[in-house]
Length: 139
Image (cartoon, rainbow, N blue to C red; front, side):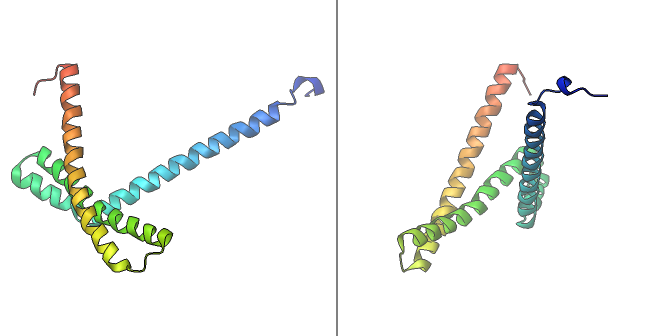
């Protein structure tokens, strides 16, 4: 038997907050899992992984396969983003000639994506060398 003065009135509020936090955590985890799945499916459907496997097998180097994945991913994502951004600018600024801006955006996105791919590889190499030196790994 539960007596009236044994349960704090704020206990129900604490329960509601806790259940809400748990629900938000589950929702965030589901969102991250869905985005990861869509990213993997996008990379597979564009042929990035299969071409990286072929390059890695032909060169007998895992590093070259990973390098191929990074550069191709950035090169494919660049024109997509480069096409979306001018479209948004056109909608905001009301520019009438949409086709030329989308082509310019796609070409600039291709160049920037390729450059960002190489920049990401440089950064990855820098981080790996930093941790190798920090942990004294020689291989």
